Image 1 (cartoon, rainbow, N blue to C red):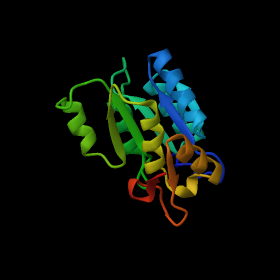
Image 2: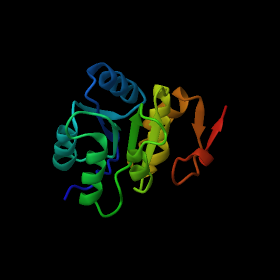
Image 3: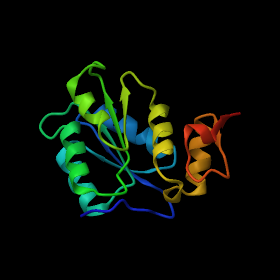
Image 4: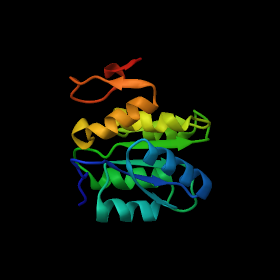
Length: 165
């Protein structure tokens, strides 16, 4: 069973989307915010990467052909006991879609609806990844680029521990 990799340096984020332009744009944005990024085209490749190489978080599209985002989330939750891998799911489906209801009942999953700002993905990752996996450079970079500053006493970066400049 794969474990969430707790790195003393840069946290690894797996980005998965079948749309190459969206995948590369998200990967570039997340990488620019101080994360190590592995970008893959489908759920099968994402699962293989996470199982073999580990990850600190996953960013995935919900709608993809074949092994889609929901199947990927279910498979990862079946593999993991604790701690759960933080997952950001982005989607263009309506808020009443049945797949979203399934995701709402899974731990450590946030759903972002398109159109969303790319900075919102990085900000959400910062809220979800434990600070033990984040180095000070990543914290400063993401906080600076999102217009916020991290509280130095916070054991975990969260909305409550971020303040506007």
